[in-house]
Length: 368
Length: 223
Ligand SMILES: Nc1ncnc2c1ncn2[C@@H]1O[C@H](COP(=O)(O)OP(=O)(O)O)[C@@H](O)[C@H]1O
Ligand SMILES: [Mg+2]
Image 1 (cartoon, rainbow over the protein chains, first blue to last red):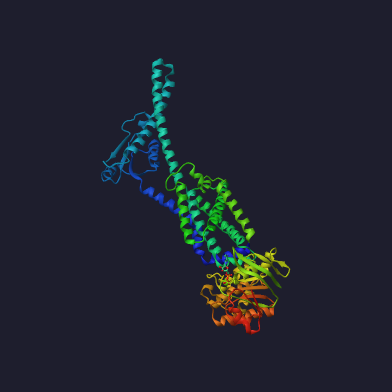
Image 2: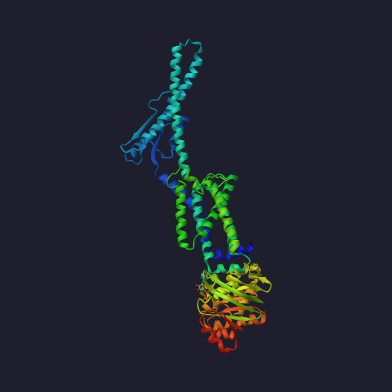
């Protein structure tokens, strides 16, 4: 093994920079794509202005709710600025959270809490105002319910007619409904967020680049198998097959070290959690991809044809993984990186690859 | 001692080699001649255990070619007709690369010495930039790293300058006489064959080689 390692070093010294480049590519490319899509998303956000006339818990809450919307970028402005900037279309629209906002809410008043500015080109006005209305309804509803319950208990001594109580409960129910609608409104927002994230899953993206780089680095298999040198292995300590399998192991280890590096880099830069499950699924993924690339490269004699097919395979994987267009259903099972994206330790492809490798080794024993 | 007995090789219905028998003793250089397509490379490849014969027996000392291929291969040095070196490696890297994979351990000094013995002195130069003669020398040196006792050379001097050709010939002669190696040597150069070889095997239908070699006093086996 050490002997094979030394022969590999002689090879690698000749193209060390391209080797390191391909090793590191999955990490760099993933970070680059994530950065790029983040930036694109940032640029496509709709600018709206918010005028905060009072600094209270409820007004700040509303401000934050608006700010959290992934499609909106909030600018703090004065009312005068808001008017000018909406007029000049610098802002899509603007909303003034009025003075006494909190007091009015707590008293259950729903009028004149917010003033808005819009132009004929305000795209975000309707969704944002709906969001605000729903939020305000939720808050006023909550305040009103609290008020009612307080009143009920205070006035226990007083005489309430059944009609009055029914009327009251209907009123509360209505408020409750308002509450519920605003909840579900928020909920749909959340699920939209989750979907978006799974489309651009960091590890999925990395896995696709990783398959590409592994395929391209595996070109040594084609180069060294077809070389005139191959005949020499008959007279050496290691058969060509043993030489290639040991090199496969070395390459797999080198790649796995880079995988671990990816775990740490993604943890610190992309907040990806580190877990034993992740590491174990990475090992399964790494063995699957390297073994698969190895067997695949054995099918080729022409190296340029192999490069072209490698790019096509990566593209197909990207499509199967739903990176380019969303895909669902059974096709995901055909995707060799699907198991890894679920951090699963059971990849059916691995068993297929191991089986083919064993057959390949045994076939070699007879004609070695 | 190499003992080839009644060897036949067919490719499909086509018989390439028929009933070939000969022996090679330690210290002997055997020349193998014949027209293109006569089956010289095929015969050498069978003796190298790379190709199986259709019938007949071959023994190397006590080792049977049918059963002991692995043990025989340790003793065989095969110099392929196509130059089998890493063009992008230097001479040194080529030698070290194959030494790592070899049965025999040798240090850099010994490897360098091996090259120098056949006047291959471009130790640090990329093999791809070497002259044809130097490449052929390297091709030979690599095959000698594991100290084989049976050396099989398939046109080792084809298309190179006279000086390199003589240097390689001189070296082979020295290997046979001083190290008692058995050498089987394919060449189209009759001067080289007559000056180098103790005996000559001529195969193929064309009587040209037999006639040309008739009167130089060397033993010729024709098949
Ligand atoms: N693997 C093979 N299958 C079929 N025919 C072959 C094979 N290898 C060699 N031959 C044929 O055997 C004959 C002898 O080839 P070879 O030994 O290379 O001749 P030489 O080295 O004397 O020029 C040729 O006619 C060649 O076409
Ligand atoms: Mg030939």
